[in-house]
Amino acid sequence: MAEPIPNCHVVAMPYPGRGHINPMLNLCRLIHHYRPDILISFVVTEEWLGFLAPGSTPPSPNFSYRTIPNVIPSEIGRAKDFPGFFEATLTKMEAPVEQLLDRLQPSVIIYDTYLSWVVELGNRRNIPVASFYTMSATVFSIFHHFDHILQNHHLCSNFSGKRPSHSNGSAIEQLVNYIPGVPPIKFTDLPTPFHSKGHEVLPRALEAIKLTQKAQYLLFTSVYELESQVLESLRQKLHLIKIYSLGLAIPYNFNITHQNSKPDYIMKWLDAQPPCSVLYISQGSFLFVSNAQLDEIIAGVRASGVRFLWVSRGEADNRLQENGGSSSNNSGLVVPWCDQLKVLCHPSVGGFWSHCGWNLTKESAFSGLPMLTFPIFWDQVTNSKVIVEDWKIGLRVKKEDEGLVTRDEVARLVLRIMDSESEDGKERRRRAKEIREVCEVASAGGGSSKIDILAFIRDMFFMYV
Ligand SMILES: *[C@@H]1O[C@H](CO)[C@@H](O)[C@H](O)[C@H]1NC(C)=O
Ligand SMILES: *[C@@H]1O[C@H](CO)[C@@H](O)[C@H](O)[C@H]1NC(C)=O
Ligand SMILES: *[C@@H]1O[C@H](CO)[C@@H](O)[C@H](O)[C@H]1NC(C)=O
Ligand SMILES: *[C@@H]1O[C@H](CO)[C@@H](O)[C@H](O)[C@H]1NC(C)=O
Ligand SMILES: *[C@@H]1O[C@H](CO)[C@@H](O)[C@H](O)[C@H]1NC(C)=O
Image 1 (tube, rainbow, N blue to C red):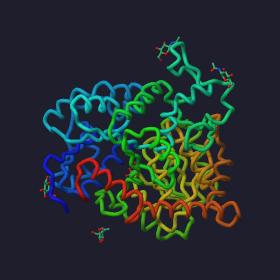
Image 2 (cartoon, protein in one colour):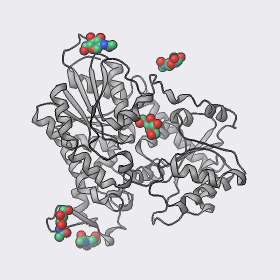
Image 3 (cartoon, rainbow, N blue to C red):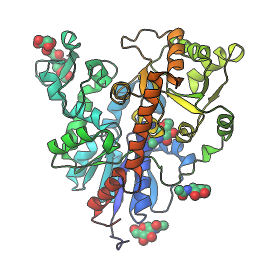
Image 4 (cartoon, protein in one colour):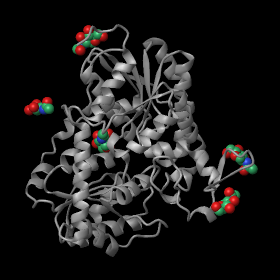
């Protein structure tokens, strides 16, 4: 190892949401793993420190959590009023973070791309910034090429000619086939802010993507081989910024101790099931899903007769309990939490029902399982399209027109995804294995993900790893 260089201090500024904090935490742990002499300050609100504490004690004195006051609405506020919450992350966090920076004097800031004010803060203070994008490079590129979407009339703009106002009904049928590196995609498969949920924040999201051009580094949590064309086209276009693809950003190569990993009964239960027989269901929050739809899903899964392991909290959990019990003709386990990657890699698990968050999408690619997709928000619909149409390892459950998916359809799809005998089922499993191999190669010793993380550390600090 080279001589430690004084003043290597990274401040990490995640966006306050689980799907953002986890990958940022994993990135910091990776940096720490390779260079324990780099100081890392991980900044969260006091509320979030409470959520993190049980499973994530800092691995060393050089890795510490720093807090800012709870200046933004709570997690519950986030669920109730997403635009208000997003706006608060853009307006309320800067002042306390600036005070913290006065004390910390970092040499680099890694920030979540959506906290766009950090770039200008870093530029003002001459601190290099790395923009960390927790969604796919494909989704980044779609936002980045917003001008193409306007030029092709998929969105109407208002008088200023710059601001999107609403999607263009008559152009909706035409494929979006003009985003460099992105295979043709239906307009309704673009991230939801372009056409439905979250449209209020589209201008803000576009601005965040635009501001990355003022950062020095851009970090993707993509597996290079899975998105090489998009990544290469972005490299050409954004040639002033250094771009890295850090792969799964999951700790596949070293140990993270989860205090919560006690529920061993899950592994015991899985051990007792036949190979490839269990459908793993992780829908996350059912925030935008009606109770009627939820009841159809529960009834459909039960009617299929397929064994299932369902991770569920809150509302969905109550309805599962109510609708479950006596009528069950198949065995299922409902759990509040599990070690997802361990479950996905268990030989008894043969299929995966997912909301298609990027984090889940990568974990499932890594596990080589065929998937049922039920995307709801933001990039999930785009990830679902990639899974179903580009990777060809999944089937869509969710209807495009938001109509109710009936229990019969759910049961039919569950049986189809678990099937490994039909041509169609065999082909999906073969493809899923291929995708897994790509991920394995990328994550292995000399693979693209490791090369890029080491390059990023080297470029940041001119130090060898
Ligand atoms: C993915 O999300 C799950 C559920 O929130 C979490 O347990 C897991 O740690 C996440 N993985 C990554 C790589 O962020
Ligand atoms: C913490 O970092 C310093 C240099 O910044 C290094 O000398 C020390 O060994 C590190 N401590 C650990 C536990 O790695
Ligand atoms: C144009 O867009 C801006 C920003 O979204 C908005 O404030 C303004 O009211 C819009 N004008 C019209 C005519 O829709
Ligand atoms: C809507 O799309 C059609 C067909 O692509 C196009 O001719 C028309 O100009 C678009 N309208 C607006 C307001 O962009
Ligand atoms: C992870 O920890 C377990 C138990 O402490 C140990 O047996 C195993 O070798 C570790 N794996 C790695 C990759 O360090």
